Length: 300
Image (cartoon, rainbow, N blue to C red; front, side, top):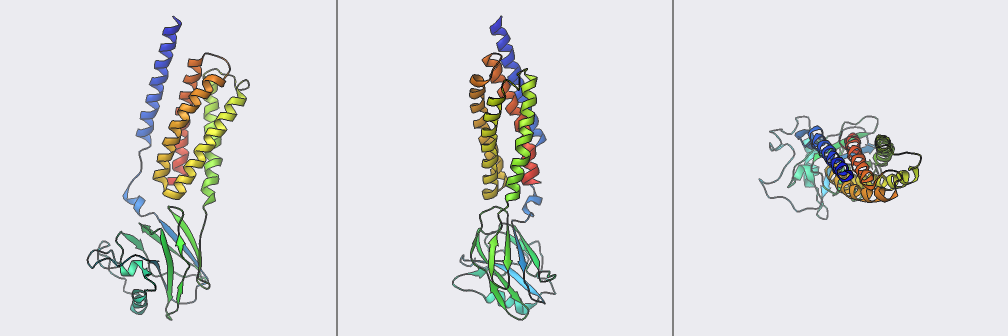
């Protein structure tokens, strides 16, 4: 009789888990769309700019792309967008002619992969911002040319994050990538308490005493959720949100197995199958909550 009850419980747990996973994938499809391409891959904030028109491009050290195969600014390959009429041809000519030690301007001399951006900066109070979309290079310098023909070239940047922000001082030529610690902080501040709260509710639902099991509950969850948060944050920052999502599922798979074993032996009260079943359901619920917070932090 007891074996039949345990078998029924396992079937219920399996049914709940499968249902949660199916609902999860229906509710949270991976949002790969055309709009995702248009999100800035690289944002450059420029300070100490002079008065007048300033044009900005990225310098890359790749060989020129053969004629007819390159994506060029305003050549008709970008949805038949012509070079704006108010662009200064003399400044454009300075940019096109620049080639020092193999470093050439990406937008005006052409790239093998699509790179979108605006050459002319909208300067206000000596400051401006420039955004590049599609496939921004990982290794580049910044070049800025004024209407007087003055040229400022930055130091080499090897970006560490999939979407990064660069601060560029025109007067000194110093460029530095920002470290987006705010996303990492949000990862901990939101994901950890939310997932802990949900798992605590599941603990009560399975009629385990939180007080009696507080030590293993906190120790195991803080370790596994801490590893999950750090792994997802590191992957998302260095490789982008899609790979961060893959890391989330990969780490969660390991956590499912590890917690099932640990809770089975460390929890007090009830049978071992019930402890394992609690772990599976708690992690399934935590997976849903974790995915919601992931999309809030890294995608939306």
